[in-house]
Length: 260
Image (cartoon, rainbow, N blue to C red; front, side):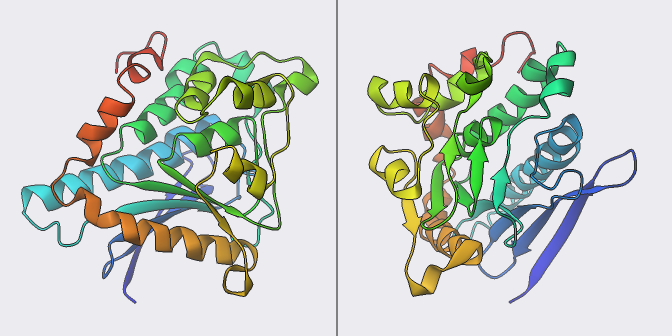
């Protein structure tokens, strides 16, 4: 298997934030959260602006280059994951820094959500461990989610510490949450969803379980398999256009102030 890798690091301190691997044979991208800045992959300014967003823009630009060159082959797709030895996909925001910056939600967090929700290729979140609060909503702005069947919870725990859920995070939830009953469990109860509960309530698409899919590495394996089945859907370059139809009412309201 031939793999091309690119690491995106912080400008200050040169801390590795994410690694983007491309399997050049299957054209499946894997974006790995490296846990070097924070062990639990907190959604800091740097992690988003200097890691995740530039990586997504790189993928977007490469897809455009393939389309322009009429070299789409069997398509492409993106999987995101924490390191496979991590118990946490993302533990949410660096809250003190986030609320200290009046522009954080609109120009940082919601900008990342916009990048995912308009990505013109399939995206799959490989949830090998916990995804809380901002990490939960990060998972929701992917097109699909695969969750470890034995470890990890999905939870919006803002209710536990008296914090309102910001505008963009609620928009991310509305993109996926199927009913008001499920939304109530998420927002008002702070329910901790196991993989099977999340699958039953329409929050994750597949549960990674069984001998072949043990642990976070097995979750990533199943996520890559799903991405591989989806990649051909972009050959005609209509994935992004049709996704815009799905999110037509949400995307214009995703961000308050910033020009998209």
